[in-house]
Length: 128
Image (cartoon, rainbow, N blue to C red; front, side, top):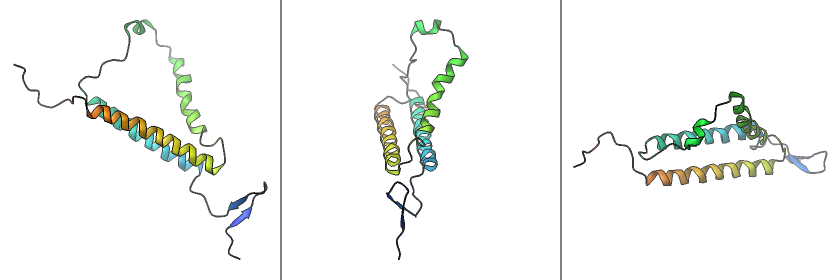
């Protein structure tokens, strides 16, 4: 008999072959894609001439409180946790694909906006 599946305790057939959709590799690949796209977006934004500060004047009066960064950074823990919360392979695959589509759509739209923006040049032409 050349069957490559076995019955899991919940009555569903499970493949004896290892799956490509494991939480840790999916998290690593998705995180790497995010970091690469984020870095590219920041690099392309740094080449723009017309990027202003996104700070209102009244915000400058708010003091910085160091511990307030902790709740902000907790989103990183939730991102990592999201890959391990559900052991179902099909839902993990859907989660990874959803995140990658979201990243791609966001950064492709950023690239579209950056492409149409004036770019910094090494040689400035004198205005007459």
